[in-house]
Length: 110
Image (cartoon, rainbow, N blue to C red; front, side):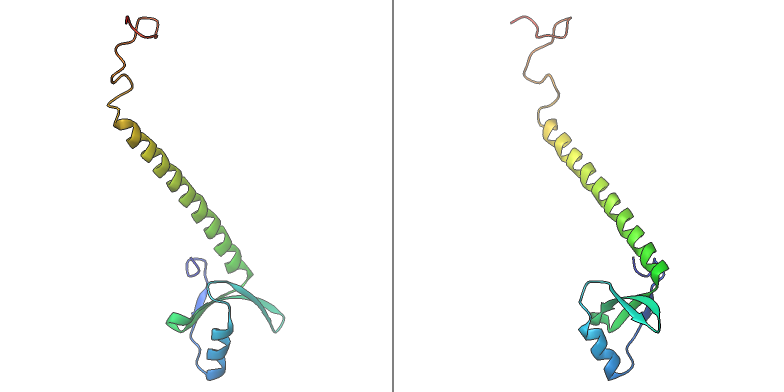
């Protein structure tokens, strides 16, 4: 999502840059100020790089996260309804084992 939001990847080239990368909180975007500008950095120490973007890229990232969360919630809801449907399918239909329904929608003769 970071790359799709326009974040650029940077690779530390010096020991000092490597140390800075290691000090950033893992799994989080960190805001920093440099020369009066705001930057957002997401470290990826496993791949020895960091994703860097400005306010515009960070805003796009937040929007993608929100959209992704809504899409995930919709998928989870669909899965929940599918599970419910599957549970009802073991009954073989609404009237399975209950006899027929009479003309007024109530139970048929006993």
